[in-house]
Image (tube, rainbow, N blue to C red; front, side, top):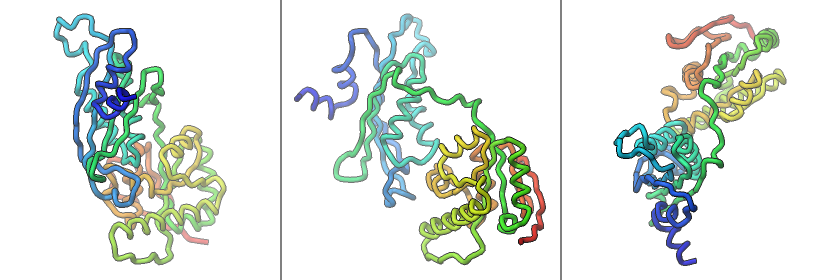
Length: 306
């Protein structure tokens, strides 16, 4: 038991050595790699960065021709730091456990990697280091989706007049007939919103106003299903469904968030279309935005309500 306690608090390299199997494996390690990042589930951890320390050990198959001194024949240390950087840049996360899992998964995609130990610790959340350590082997790593298989949806912005229009059902009929992954976006409703007098609180209120309007759209037609997570969006796109984007989760969790606030509804939708790598952006009931990098279409800029 005392040996296991020693492994628990020592560098993961000692745990790797102590739990090694019979076959010979080499190890590469990253020690005390500290990055400032925004992460955490608590409200106090949003909008600010904290120091996070990474210790990683990767067990790899031995290199047969190391004397050739060829960097392409080994698992480079850069692959470890690149895996950390890539997962930190992908999206804002709440849990260290999720981050550790994704880093391990990415590292185990390397052909030489057999087993990986990932320890992540928050250095600024208390008098000590608070963290998690996981161990994953190649056979435990779930296959990552091929990037080329990623769907590219059409994003459709509906103005408030378009939501209330008698033509809404006809527009949805046409979108459904196209059998393409489609994501509908809306802005806040026309009702006044509370003035919080605080930027972060107001941002939440404005995002919730958009989500309220998304649910109003969903009430108009059962084909409009409100979704808020990337997982739900991906599932909907893969089944060529029509979904309505509720923006709070993606906006608040984004590493490189939108350059505009929620009150600029069309600007937020342009950011979302880029984020989703949309095939095109269709605007119903509003003039086209200035977005030369996106294929844009407009339908009925002037819409009469019911």
